[in-house]
Length: 361
Image (cartoon, rainbow, N blue to C red; front, side, top):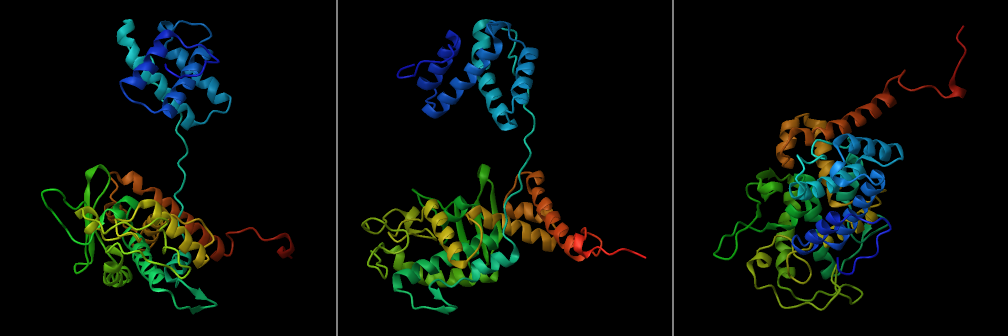
């Protein structure tokens, strides 16, 4: 393979041919190829000279056990198995093997981490924050900064109100538009109080928008025209407001930008990275003691709705999950919340501190 470094462990010719195939025919990235190379080197080392054609499922199962005993985690084992499986799937027919020895093997299940969600109080503090506030008093914001704050408030209220994914929010249009060149993937219907979004797997859903978000969106739609024009906006320091770092080009001419609900200071559809940065800044200014990213608001939406309504199917529909099992993870968050309430409220839930213990008579 052109430009490849020398291997600490020599790979068999079929392995090198497979990597070459992935590089030239499949256009795999250098990063992926490097990972596959390391996984194949691990297989060669574990096999200890055993020919590739003689490696059976039993051998591979034993190799997995050895790696697991050395501390390799489930995710790393699963990735390694995928590399081995891919190689044998390509090479077995050429070598005349009866089948793929990796086909039936599975790595141990990785423990599923809980999504991070804000508490109700933290969410309220975040969304009630007034940009420019000093000592509880709102300072006068330059027009450029006020427009950006208006947009950001509408975005964050909508995230929490409707549990959207970041890509779904940035893909929203002001209204549904269909032309010969363009069709809206998602759009806002403020009168109906809902957004229509295109989620994962091309699954479309309609999600309600709460009153606080509708108020923020109405204010933003009034301000939006000033940003959508693509006019350079200067902040109080004289630098471009908000996320802008370069000279502003002319107003967008394509309908994908012209019809975008949320736009940047250059007038084009807002980029996901800008949303992430603005939310992190907003949370820091609001004093929220956590790193807040867009998915945290989606998790908070799901957790808080489930705590109040206890309707798992409704939350599944609003989040756009294909399987109810994906949504069920929020029941664990809900249980954690209930457990904390129990520990604080039940007189015999928590162990008394040593100083508080009294000798019974």
